[in-house]
Image (cartoon, rainbow, N blue to C red; front, side, top):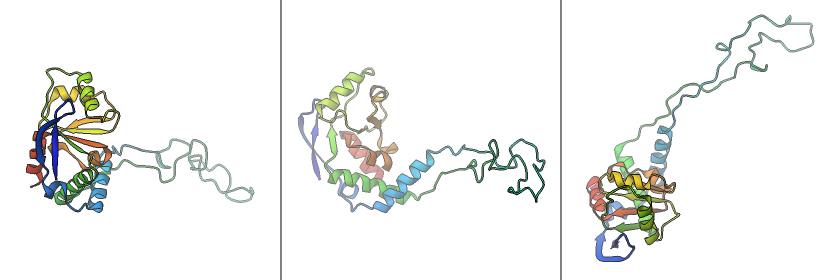
Length: 208
């Protein structure tokens, strides 16, 4: 697949770039995408939730009334989960939600996600750019010129650029990342992928 390289004004620069078929044109594997997204979301969970169970609740262990003859149910103590202020039955405990996934499956998932975006024509390649200082307005102007303002955008630069990152940080629907930090969830969760020209080569180095 061959795409035109646009400048930051949204106009054709006259350059073309070829997307490698083994990265951007493979047969997508939905199961790999599902597993990678599941792992990413699971690893975001802290797992610090905790509810007190019967042995942990403070309260008297005195039997409230005799076992038989009252016409009511049997009650062992005030800490019974059926009472207000009592314990919780099978409450959440502190646990680790993280999952492990093979590197090859993760790689297949990212290639599959990129291939879906290429099929849907949601990949835009722009010339490399940088800002002298953080300026959100400049970043917004680039999005306007590319007709992607107000949409979910993932901007992929070949290397970290602090000024570009700070310029986009306040925009809820835009995120800046690099090829090494690219993950399946962010690819699938974005509407458009805006690749800088040099980042395409970095991604192909990463996967080939």
